[in-house]
Amino acid sequence: MDVYTIQLAKHRLCVPLEIPIIDITAKSGIPQFAPTMPDVVALKQGKMEWDAYVDIYIKKLRNTWMYHRHQWDMVLSMPCVAVACYCSYGKNCHRYVWVDVLKKVASARGIAVNYIGDITEETKR
Image 1: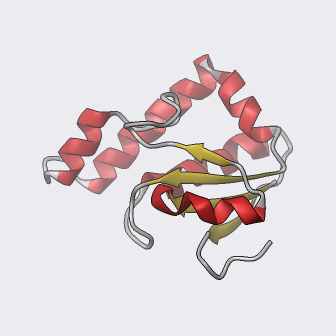
Image 2 (image 1 turned 60 degrees about the vertical axis):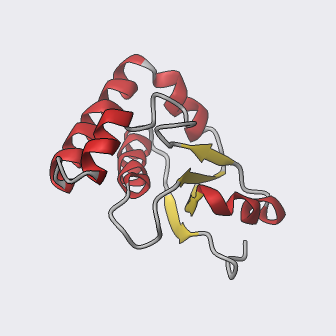
């Protein structure tokens, strides 16, 4: 399966590429894949360090794997997907953490994940 990441504000770039988007934002995303709003706010306000945020987020994703496996199965059934949130490119961002977790989940199911990278205006499929 091919996996991309994208800023949600640039979602239109996926249309000509015919790449479906999974929204993992705290505001509008799939709740089982999104960080909690209190954690996002704490990170943005400097009340939480990035490493602590990642630890909390990974624990949430592990919980989703245990109790909402159908969400992961839905993603794993897709030959190609773009994971989206509002974070800027090249910054600490949970979409990259999510991709790392997806790789582990997919590997446990015998599915190879090819992370292509961020979708930009130059991306071709």
